[in-house]
Length: 211
Length: 214
Image 1 (spheres, chains in turn green, blue):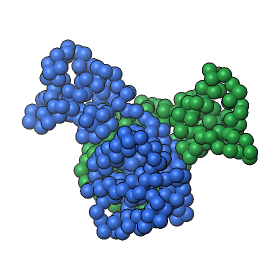
Image 2: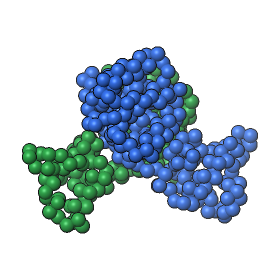
Image 3: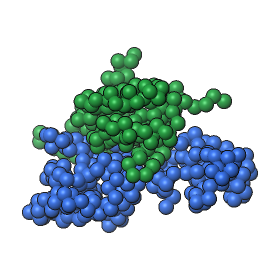
Image 4: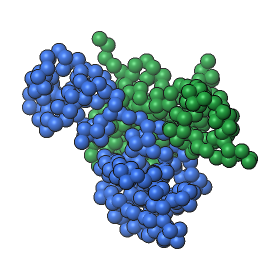
């Protein structure tokens, strides 16, 4: 049986020492250094070149946290589909960069490690991330519905109608909430709902650009 | 009762937008360490909460660089609030050390909480696309049984044969479960430090949190 290949995704700020514990203890065949647009990764690249580590730098702007996380997901997903194991080391860089990597790891269900005071590894269960937690039919409904959605339309339906069931499930997942649009009661997206819709729309854009 | 949770570092402004934007807020629970500047920020949050009639409670995180410790404290607090029937509107993850913030993100995904980040410059709240991911229910009862046994005996890592003997199951069955669990990254097969010919099964401390083994 072929050995499973490993991808290590490490956040990097300024010090090489931030990535060394992960490099030494997490088996990997390829390394992705996640760096901020403003960062100078020359110290790390010189060090990695000397070691002969196969790596690439992925530049993100963590000020747009979701977009930066998505950029990482987009880069890593190809390897996931090929059956590579993916591990995130969030020790390096500033907080926002670590949060970005954590969000990406949660989105694809990859293992997360940090070496701030002591080694700490979190198995997040591969392929169980946000996309799996959001069922396809809910994702479709989020994407295709024009929000806010008139409450009267749902109230007119039988409780077992697919749309009524879908709206109930979205309410249970805290994706939508009752509101008043104009003068009529309606169902609007919550903060989580808006964030998930934003994520789906951006992912849809990425998928299309691959086609 | 409506409550919010938040990690707090040196800047009260990373938390205050959530205090101000949450409708009917009655309680704010803040996770912060004992650093004098963190306590200063806490005092600032407290003064705003007092004016707004919001009860402020601090949960001390003794080591703000210990991700696991912070995550445990946060999960305990979330569950205690839920037991009391309180509604947790949102978890603001913007403040504190990066390990506190990462721990908060993890707990939001595990407990299905709404989470927001506050932009460093504009101080605008940014909701994050997180949904509940129940890691503990992603394993079969047999896998859980094997894992629970390994967890209980983690101080003396055992071989697959010893584990099979310990739980009274056939070696092939246990080996299969261990292979699957290793493939999922939940446990590791490592060389025994005392005898390199022996391969023992090890687990990480975080497993307790992720798989609800505590």
